[in-house]
Image (cartoon, rainbow, N blue to C red):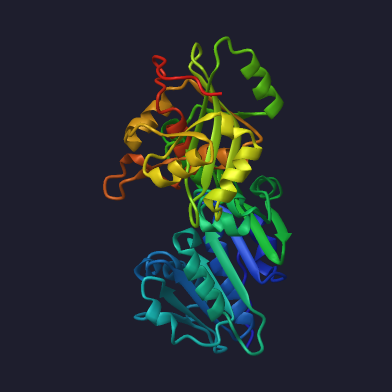
Amino acid sequence: MTLSVEKEVNPHFEDFLFDWRCKTQLLVGGYGSSKSYHVALKILLKLLEEKRTALVVREVYDTHRDSTFSLFTEIIEDLSLSGKIKTSSSPMTVKFPNGSKIIFRGMDKPEKLKSINNISLIWLEECSEIKYAGFKELLGRLRHPTLELFIILSTNPVSKGNWVYKHFFKNEMEEYFVLDDEELYKQQTIIVNNTYYHHSTADDNLFLPESYIEQLDEMALYDPDLHRIARKGRFGVNGILVLPQFETKPHDEVMAEIALIRKPLRKNGMDFGFVDSYNAVLRMVVDHENKWLYIYWEYYKRGMTDDKTADELEVEGLKKSIIKADNAEPKTIAYFKQRGFRMYSCKKLTRLENTKKMKRFKKIICSDACVNTIRELKELTFKKNPKTDEIIEDEFNIDPHTFSAMWYGLDDYEVASVKGVNSK
């Protein structure tokens, strides 16, 4: 049975509606871009054409009722298909005259996923809210003996620390790269590795009232982070930066500036790690007159035994330099001393005291050769209390080992006044 439907859609989504070349399809966009609407319409059209069972997933099952399920119901009524396509609210299902059906599940009720069979199409709405393990589990649920398989993901872009960005774009920590998100913003649609990428903003939705777009524009005045997500539809820093004065410069430029400092204070700090965390060593120079901090060299490795780390640091000439290290590791510090290193325990300051000290520098200038320091500190943000939405001043979005190395290396330095000795 074939049903003919006509519907005016946004031009930016016309090709997307009928493009099934790729198994995986990712839609990233700002508020009001109509991405969810067109995903729902695309699924309806596909299930009218072919007998399939589609699974629609959100992190919390109950949120379907006022979002995806409501959206499907609205489109069915708008297309005058409510006499042919039947919806049921308990449990939420959509059934088609050709035997196709749509079922709704939440990752908060994983037991409900176990009984599902012959799923050939999955839609993950607000996929950034779903855990990465959940996404991989759903990939395992996507199977059918004869039909081609598809998984569609839609989301507002959040932090670059979210798994969606790391999986579909790049994960600098793992040196994993698929696509530069800036390229997607430029092209708006692109195919890479059998994944169809689609980017949209409110400007792509011709049915939005002008007042709604003005409301999004106003966010730039009071909430730049939300404006980036909601208006521009872009990934980035999600939260309050710990070090807003952090900047990067070419290595040669950094070294030339250091050479011009009248009385440079040289500092070295080390944070210890092994399996999950990293051995991080930073070589730094303080320009006390300007209250600027330079970071010009880093060592950043994990899975290294103390003897191998000592060997490598000796090769790098660190044996002659004073190094301040984590005071929670006296045995490790004792080992490095036995090897002839001038390593000492740092003064015990709280995380909050250390963080406030770093924020007093007018500038923190990092050589572009220190890639791990840049990765950890450029977009380091404070954690928030989920109940009050207030920042927690001594907790961060990641565990920044290079930040700890900064703390330790600068333990005897106050931005307001010079204390302690100068390290070489």
